[in-house]
Length: 361
Image (cartoon, rainbow, N blue to C red; front, top):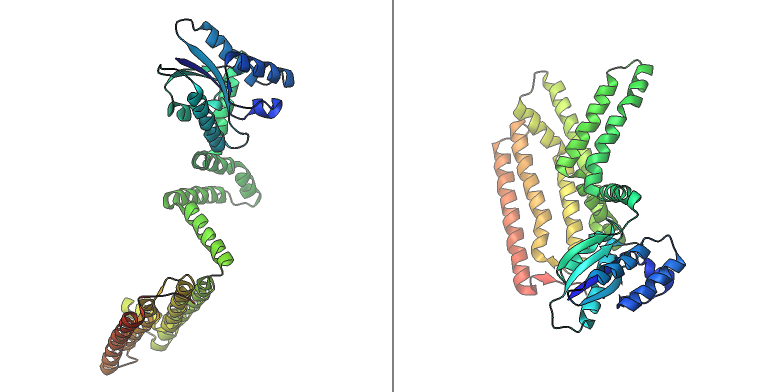
């Protein structure tokens, strides 16, 4: 059995005439076509319905049925889903022992996006596109361009480099006025380089994900959002302090510092701030885990381990910079090790006694 399926993806038939869909049967489809032509003679879906009737009339060697299915206006995904549901209803209503095949009639490239949905339910023998002849190529070009511009991946790949190239001329005029002829090439090269780098590293997706996490944290009242912000400020202060320590050491010695001494001075100056940032951020994660009901005693090891590592680094850098002797280095290494072991043992004991996970009450 051949099913001539007229597809109206944006539901012009239902919206403009009020006809219930799907429409099944030659007389019903003809009546619906007349109603749509009366409501809007310029609608291309009128041609689709009449073309479906024409295709059905030309089939004489087998049984044939005509049906019209519609989607919804505004969303291609929802429209395709609606067409699939109406097609299921049509197929369920066909009383035949024969295998059903379909000929799909559409009014252009846009409606043909539903073909995979139809093919998943019934074999397709052919597709008949009905458009005004002088507008066929124009419509196909229009929907091709529309698809390219709607696709974020293709849009970014084509439009951004094109926009950068188009900026060369106004930038050259600006550079000529400012008597900086080389600036236009530098700016253009920088823009293209930044674009290629961002595409290669997927910076856009990373930025979107970062913004989404911040937004979720704000609305969820997550403490870690504040502690991360504070930790970031502490890291910045630590960086400046480390640089200042290097400069002070350089001014005090008068000789050129070795690479080891520069690194040690940088770590020594910034260590207390970095340790404070680590403890602050880790406590924020611990509090959020407790609020979410995911807190485990072992999570408290994080701030303790940060302090232990800070003790080790302080001992090592003090020894390298001659601020501390070998005994102080041995003291910090031993103290950090004992601190880590004591924390691990105490929290493991707490887990065995009170359970691994603590839920807020």
